[in-house]
Structures are given as structure tokens and as C-alpha cells.
Length: 320
Image (cartoon, rainbow, N blue to C red; front, side, top):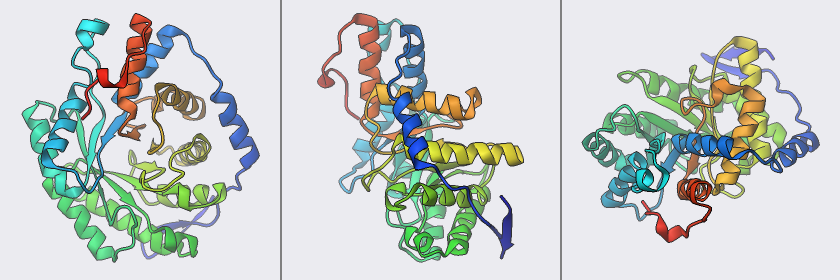
């Protein structure tokens, strides 16, 4: 797949056509998998370390964000008592830019600096329908407040209208902002796949994003504000774009399905999909994340069931 350079951005000349029937067939087969108890426990603990624990509501308050941080650092207060071990912390706390400073201060207070990241949605989230300079300023403010990672959303209207250079330019500009601050914030590019309509569009948008981000940055399915959000077939299409970019250039990129992943069983099916498409290297929070709010407690409930044989009620686990 060749790319054309236009005004400093890369616009892939074409993308492969996606066989939707086979994508859905493969994902349906993976969703029937069962795994052994020891492997399941390891997968659930790995999934915990990959969660971007998220609150993106208009009613978010500083205390809710501080509580979310405490939950992210110590997901289960009784882990050593019930499970006999300390569980891992989550990958990141994901909040609006206005809450970044609160999250940063609380994580620093908890001694989690450099462990649990602060991720912030930006660039006119969730619509992306703002002038580019406003979206750049939104990103700059989030990073200045302490964000380690930026989850940007592309303009789906521009993409669906075929204005690929415009979309590529907005991705490149946000990527440059992230690269130019301190140690550099990582970027996750949200495609909002529920609005892209077809697998071919998802693949095309994935290739466009990958051509204009830095090594180690991510592509992400969804904002969580549009239905459908993450699905296994859409995730597979995006994983294959990452695989093809790696095989073509040797560059490693990350992946984040977000929205609609609520159970431990779903999580380890996604991990099977990652392992079989990209390999063990991607079974790492640095290259794979789940965007979720309710997933974490079901991962904990699943681990307790493996240990005790009892699937505890949701209210037995703290909410953020």
C-alpha cells in the first residue's frame, strides 16, 4: 500500500477490501472459546492491567475522579485477603480535560506516578466538529494539566465526505502537539467506528491514522457515546491494519477497543483475538487497552469466582 505525501501528511493511496463474512465468522468462532482455569486467571489479571478506567459524564465531580483514581490504583481492597495476592493497577484513568489536574494530583498523592497514566479525551470530544485550532488548544491544555495520553476523535463527517487529507492533517497536528511536550504524550486516535458504516471504511480510516501517528501510539474504536461501540469484528479489522503496518514497516502501534466491553469473558476473548492476530508482544498495557467503566468489577468478580467458586454480587465490590 503506497502513500502520497501532501502538505506534510500521508494519505494512503488505497486500503485492502475487507471480507466481512470471514471477519464475522472468525470472531464468532473465537467467542465460543473456553480456556483452562490457570490461563483464565492470568488473562483476567492481564486485562485488569489494560483497563483505561473511564468517567466521561457531564456530572463528573472532582471527588468522583479522585475515587476513580483510588479504584484504579487498588482495584480490589480485599485482594490479599480473598485471593492471596495483590492485583495489578489499571493502565490509565481517562477523564475530560477539566478533570486532568485533579486526576494527576490524586495519583501523585497515591504514589502511582509513572504507573497509572492520566488519559484525557480532547479535540472536541465526542463529535470532533470544532475548528482545528480549538481542538489543538484543547489538547495543549490537557497536556499542560498533566495528561500522559490524549484520546483524540477524528472528524467522521470529513472522512465520510472523502476529505482524507483534512483528516490526515488533523491527526498529524495533534500528534505533533503530543510529541512536542516534555517526554511526549501518547496519542490514541478514535475512529468512532459505529459511524463509519462499513468494514472497508474502518480499514481505510485505520490506515489513514496509522500513517500519521508516531510509533507506540494507538488507534481506538469508539468514544463510548455512539452505538454500536467496540465489537470484535471491527477490532479485528483494526488489528489487521496494525499487523500489516508492522509487517510493511516494522513500526509497532497499539490498539484500544472502547465501549460495550463489560464482562471478563468478553475481555479474554479480545485477548485471544490480539494474540492470534498480532502475537504475544501486543499482550501488554503499552500496546493494548480496554476503554471501560463497568468492565473492571466484572474482572474482579470473575477472579473471585475462580478462587472461591462463588460469583459474588456487584455490590460486593466498590464503585469508583
